Length: 200
Image 1 (tube, one colour):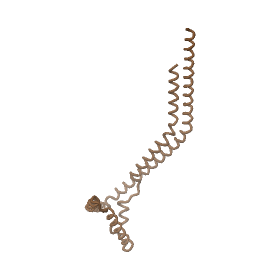
Image 2 (image 1 turned 90 degrees about the vertical axis):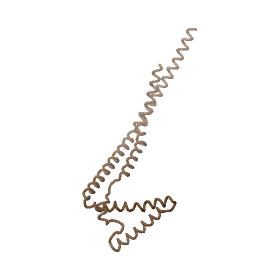
Image 3 (image 1 turned 180 degrees about the vertical axis):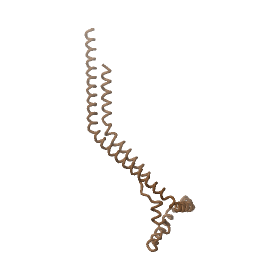
Image 4 (image 1 turned 90 degrees about the horizontal axis):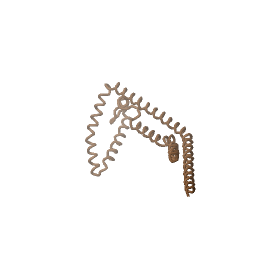
């Protein structure tokens, strides 16, 4: 009876060992697959990450230099432009009354915003006629003043933030999955081997 019990325990142990060896083999297969996947996909992920890094640095450089250039220009022209800035602020303050009226009319359900757009379109066409025939603006500062005091070609913060968001989205997918895709398999394989070895 003792012999058969020992034989039964030995057979069970042999099956358990074979099962654990199978788990070790599966774990090694997962590690091999993870290493192969990483070796295949990681270079592409690295290239894409490098491209995104270069694009981001270029965007940051353009944003910094164009905004600094505009700030320097505005500071250099500040004494010349102060009068025009004051006029612009006064104009904006005076336009608060029509803005409030448009808001109230909109709340009442009237198409006041469309009326405002139509009025400005009409004034723009009148302004264009004056420029073509008389040579002066009636609703804008002259181009030389606008260029010196108000216009400045620069990368706006909204465009910069949009680029940052796009870069972050590219890093999230597809770059990170390409760089880390095989790590889950390798960790799973190591965990399987560790559990199998621990149960011997």
